Structures are given as C-alpha cells and as structure tokens.
Length: 415
Image (cartoon, rainbow, N blue to C red; front, side, top):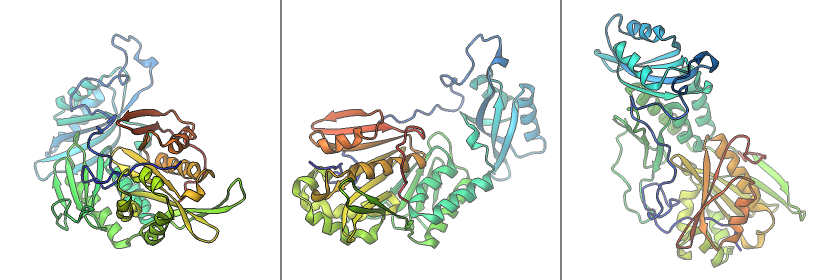
C-alpha cells in the first residue's frame, strides 16, 4: 500500500507533467463578472432596506479610464463624494498623453449597489470601469507591496509565481517549460523584453521557457507589465535559491528523520530512491509505465513549478518526497514514500506541511489525484481533518480539500 498520488504519463497542456490528463475538467473556477454587471450575491444591502446605517460600509476596488486633462480626476472624485463614497487610496497608470487608468480603494455605504457605483464613475467622466469587492488586507500602498513581494522572491525561487500573483491581483500564472518530456518545444520563444497583450503577459522564465500571466477580467497596464518584468529580472539575477532549513523529527518507533526543502540538486538521490521502490509504488504514484518515472523528476524538483519536501534518514538517504505543485488557482499535492518507510507516519507529516505551505501561499484548496484503490493516500488525506470532496472516473480519484488559516493543520512549514 503506497502513500502516493498521480503524475500522468504525458502532459495534456503546457503546464508540466504533473497536470492531470485531458478528460478531467477544470474544477470550481471562481466566476468573474464583466464590468458593469449586476451586483454580486451578498455584496449589496438587501433591496428595500430602509436602514443602510445598520450595515458596515463596504470596501471596493475600482479601475476606470479617465481623460488626461486638468480637472478630469477632480470631477470623478466629486461624483463619488456626492454618494458619500470615501477614497482610501489612489494609484495611477498612465496610458500616454490621452488617458490614465486610475485605481481606487473605496469605502462605500452598504446600500450602494455595484451598478450604482459604476454609474457614478461614468457620470464623473470614467469609462471602461471595473469593480470588485476588496478587503482591509489590500489597504497597503504600492511601494510597500512591491518591496514585500521582492523580498519573498529574493529568499526562494519557488516564490516568483506567488509574488507575481500578490503584485498583480487575481490572475492565473503558468510556468511553461522550454521543452516537453519528449524534447519538443512547448511554446514560441519569448523576447527578452517580454510581451504585453492586453489581458496576457508573457515573460521569459529565468530557468528556461516562459511565464504566462492571464487576467481575463482586467487588462494589464504598462506600469504593471514593467513591475512584473522587473521582478522576473530580479529572479534571474539571483539565480536558483531554496531555503536551507532542516527539521529533525523522531518517528513513533524511535527513528530520526530530517525534513527539508528539495530542488534539482536532489535529482540523483531521487532517482536512486526510485530504484529502491517497488513497481506497484511507482505505478500508483505516476499512473504510467514504471520505466518513465525518472523522466518526471527534473520537472517535479524544479522550484519554478512548486515546492518539494524531502525526507532523509539519519544516514542521509532520501526516502520520501512530497510535492506542492502550482496549478493556476489551485495547488496539487503528491507523495512518494519508499516501500520500507511506509506506514510510519511520514506521508501524514509531509502532507500536513504541504497543506500549511498552500495556506501561506494564499490557495483556497488543494487536491490529490490517485487511483481509487490507493487506500494509503486516501487515508493520509483523511488524516488532515479537513472536509474532503471525492470525484471518481474510470478508477481515477481526485480528492480535494478546502483550506483556511484556521483549518490548516498545525506544524512547521518546512521552509
């Protein structure tokens, strides 16, 4: 019985070999309303509420394009003020000599509906207005936010996709390898300066390939493109880096193990662990021919596609790997424990740490893909103590778990 998850034999999309095959649809993506759409459920006061003061004000993030002429911004602010809307923060994104995209953090009366806010912006001279609910955590000035994400990136190669997300807001980020496992190019080369195409950014990945950032609900501005490019250039200058923290733990039977971050420098040790694993263990983990298992390791160990935890014995032998793989708005967890070290609590220890890292990275859910007969992985997921959702098709099971800072298992993050 293996504590294992899934990596299909061939990628169905350019997102790397950990992606599940094409028959499984994208799950539970958060819908995005277009600008000017009706109010989001639960975001506005109930219709007909005669006591708006009984409800706390609502925070909104708004973007609108304003003509570049004297008094244009003042007219927009005056239109908002007439409806008792407070402007808490303002950021400008110049588009040239004719217009500027202005981004506001607003505090509005609870009774003021989304459509009404958009109408106020239009009345004040704005166009192409976009609006979404915000929270107090977004009340951070831009220089502070940029410095924070730059610090995260400087400490850990795996942080670059997360840092881009923190800087650019709600978006999907994909790292596309230069070559597939079969050696074929995965995409057209990206020029050194990158490509800005309205709702898509393409940047050269310092580790090879491309970083693709998509935000269908809101076009990127030249200022955002410049910030993203500068962050990627910082990552390229620093080179690959992984925190070197090591946690020594004692298993119930008395054996000491060390849990640490892993990277491509562990490739040789990981291949040696594969050789000690049974065919059943490898088959449950990778869902394909056992002879192909080694081909996935370079991708799985790359910090660009997520984080990997390794377990070493007191003698320094690698006996287990746990992967947290970035997958758009979700994160996949996967485990491989060498046969002789299964059923000792190692899988549960790794999974708890991976889930905590996913929470800290801002993911709202994780999922594992495995065979329905893999009772070891199912039991390990149940051991999280989180609500689980099971989807089964043709013997393949996707187990997903919602996350929250409160529900996340306690323990070190393994950084």
